[in-house]
Every structure is written in structure tokens, then in C-alpha cells.
Length: 230
Image (cartoon, rainbow, N blue to C red):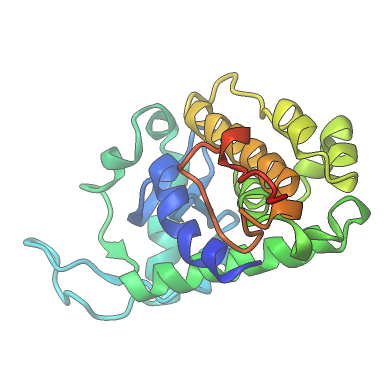
């Protein structure tokens, strides 16, 4: 992925997922942390450097948590079926453990890189490295929300991407929002990203728009393509 995409991704996804240092459950009752990072099953959580929160009532603030302590808190969150409808803030007062900012940043980059590597192995996205930055971010956004295999399950979308038809990709990229209203703004952003990519490709012959430049959240139109000099 282009450097502009990698650097923008954490802030981009934070708008849709939040940034949460403690464990919570999402709408599907899956234990989550960071910027929508699933840590379900518990083995995923056990691999992370949890520490105790620094707040009144919690002893050993800042000290590392043991595997047993991480597992116990994970089970507490997972087993409370009421939490899925309450939002992540409901889990703050009942959790004692957290990840540092550095640990969250590492978690985000690790997952982003793994998603990218998976996507580039799929025939539909094998030219990912040459895509406009906006299209790269759009595909990574979809894979973040659905898992890296998700975009490949959209037949018309994947054909559009394989053909570098990002105008069609913008039409076919919508993820199912039923029961997950948080996907609404992400879907809207993805449409803009793929639409921007179509404009970037259309303007390549004039050299007015660059594939490595991330234009989002700006909305590009054909008017952004400089006319050719005769």
C-alpha cells in the first residue's frame, strides 16, 4: 500500500470504530479492542500486552496482567450478553485491563498488513499495488469491516476491481448494514474512495492527479482533471 494509505488508515477507521483501550463486545457479541480489532477467541487476547488501568480502585496500576487475569476479564465481557447492545463505554467500569497506545498502534498495523497481504494473493486484487491510493484505502476499509475474505464475496465488485473499473466498484461495494448501523458511514466513505479512484485513473493521461496521493475526504469530480495542453 502507498505510505499515504498506511498513515491515514488509523484515523480513517477510528471515525467508524472508535479507539478503545479496554475489552468490549461488538454487536455480534465478539470481544473487541483498539480500532475494531477482534480478540475472539481468547487466545488472541492472551497474546497481547495487557496492563492494569491507572485509575482509583485498581491496585498495581500499570503493571502487566497475567494470562489468567487476561482470560478472566475476557470471559467476564464475553459472558455478559447484555453488553452487545450497550456500546463499548458500558465495558469501561467493569474492566481493569487496558492496552497502551503503542500496543494499539502495533495491533492496527499488524492486522492491516496481514489484510493487505491476503488481498493481494486474490486474483481479483493482485494489481492492488498499482491502484490509486483512494481505491487501496477503500478495499482495506471493506476488509477491516468484514475480514480480508469479505470483499471477494462480492462477485460484481471483484470483477470491477480486476478490470480497474472503480466507478462500478463504487456501486458494488456496499456492505450489508442490517443490524449494524455503524456500517452506514463506512459504506458512504467507501463509495467516495472508489469514485475518487475512478477520477484519478481518468486523469492519468493529463498527469493532474497522482495514484500515490490520497485525496479522501475530498470528493473528486471530472472537473479536477486538468485539460490537456494543446
